[in-house]
Length: 71
Image 1 (cartoon, rainbow, N blue to C red):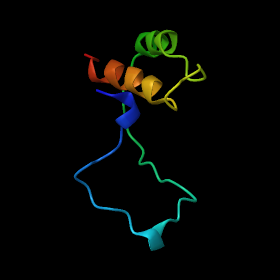
Image 2: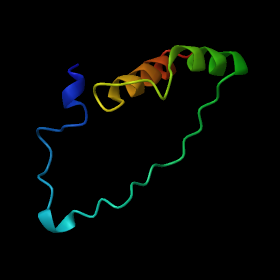
Image 3: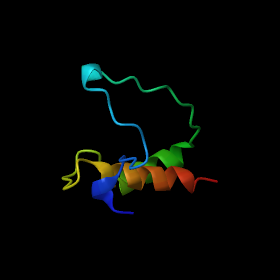
């Protein structure tokens, strides 16, 4: 995947220019159960305040891949 194009839906609808209220984003709560060992492992793999050339998308993808491979 090209990280610079993450989140772009080329087949999606075009945003309405009258609907450009980006004052807040609502993110739903999720329930992900992890053991303390898994949390420690995730914290050692991903530094959330690390420098990123792609607005943190690379950090998000690291966490996402970690969570997808839990079990």
